[in-house]
Length: 295
Length: 106
Length: 233
Image (cartoon, rainbow over all chains, first blue to last red; front, side, top):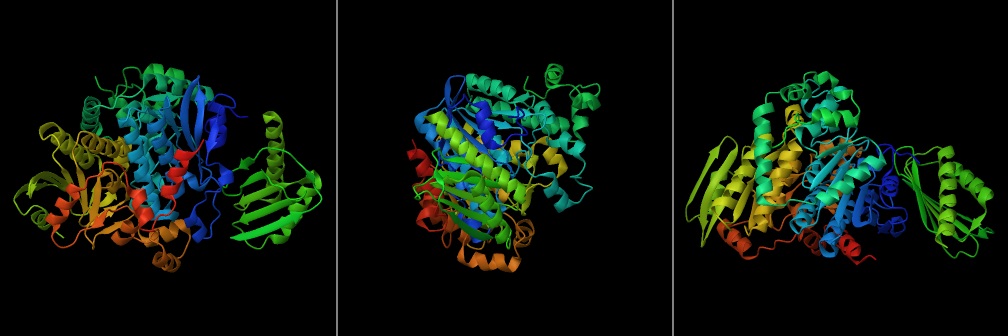
């Protein structure tokens, strides 16, 4: 079994993160809760609609978990898929696990379910926020091939904590979407290094769009998740106002930057070119004092 | 999309726990194996994105049953254009997982 | 419809609402209620500045006018599709706005939204779709993407999609389809201030959209799936 989070399937991630044999799945594949809309379009539909949900334990704490499978339709959210995520979050408000863990890998709304997909993503956003407002910690992990985009990029940022790997990507409109709409001069989706400097884990960490960055391994993700559970959540007006200030400062300070490198330079990195080089521990150490954080 | 069904009689009733392997992604497939009382038969249901490959599926499934001769089992396949070699590999993985899970739980 | 005309009709008892850029902001009187009005116009795209400005407006209402209802007037062609916005983390700005709306809800502000012109995907998620009551004018355009773009992505012909759109509210754009799916509480026609007063009488702070979608027959699985998760072992 691979120890890479990036390389693993959603099921393998659950198995790799949770304590052995602790996972209990809700609405598993055998329930055949497939998408009725894909059936209408005569497209094969995964037995679990691309998301695996259930409960389990991690470091002896009971948690609820949901893992999106990027391999099926890019992890996109349809009616059933979204309802499974909402179910986990609402159940958490009732049952009070130590946290809800969302392993997100998704392009956002499943366009084959257009309107139903958009409403589903909105329901997920509201369910995340309702869970937090009720005192449930919601932890998001992003480190798969498909990243986390579209409406689910917004949903991710509604959580208490985001953990990313360097390989993870987080944004709203994907590079291809912008390139298609505005042309290659606006955003060259094939320039992988530039895309990484825009939506990649290290850039997101330096901007404070994610809270923790880890190396691409199950152990690293697990450690960060356990720390995230221990840190809990701060759902308060004061926290929201700090975030507001951070986001306002970000536009002021970096609004004229054309490239991730310009932002990193502004953050005091003498050699922004070198950010891609160091391993995760070195990077985190070097980033100390060079992130766009609240003072 | 095409739906195909196969039934093979005379297998050995095989205990196990419901198993799913693979992912329904391009060039891949997912296989679900469940215990069902079928009088020793093995039923296979395939839902595939690619039309017109019925005879190849028939051959792959016949070969699968000849290898394992499992009975009282339902195999459900969702396919997104996997090659016969990949299909055979996933079927083997699925049945092995089904049996292994059965042993670890009892 | 022009936003000014919408505000006149929503708040016939007086209002102080103004436009700055594509942001609309102010307050109005509707029967016994004074409501905060926050919105956008000109089918604008929502980028980092506008999302932040809307969030600031919500925080301001939370601070200065406890429990005052907030009415979002929605007219957007979606999130701004620019490299710069992605570089700055537009999803984070949108989420921040959504969090501000949720915080307002939790502190007792009724949240109502009215799609008076256009609502598209990302621009709609962070405010309009966060409301307790989400309404639209019947002629409003609501969609994820156009049919042509959807045909490209799904590799299904536009003709076939239009055909499917006749029997299912899922595929084709339109306010009526969102109504059937439970994404909208109601279409507002006639006396808009009466509609708003009704909405303010019937605030339900829980997300009831899957129940509506089920009752109206447009989205039959979301509700039972959530129920099944809640009932699982």
